[in-house]
Image (tube, rainbow, N blue to C red; front, side):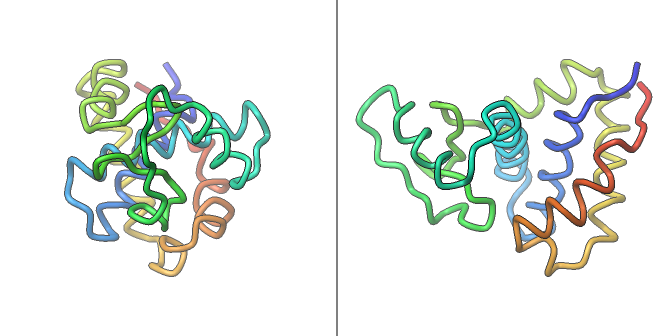
Length: 147
């Protein structure tokens, strides 16, 4: 079975976050949050500003979202974790998407692919969301991964 773009984005963002110095659990949370954010962008064709407004509206309770913790990723944070689509994302969410859904071997293939892409990526692309999207994600998003 061919791996679709969502788990690829999650893994790529995980390894991006790791290379930028985040610990494994937080990098996995960032990875799944970034994949969700881009799925929302694609579905709604939202600009980042409109996305921020949409996140503020989705809050199910009175929550103060922090837009500085994950500024490089343009993600909201709640209690130090990424917040997307009205909920906090964690390492468990990443593990579920990559390893529960695709199996241990499939998850390893996805992560191997992402790690190889990120190892070759200059840091200036890792720290700029638009450049990362255009120069890293777009050229690699349809790389075949069979599981």
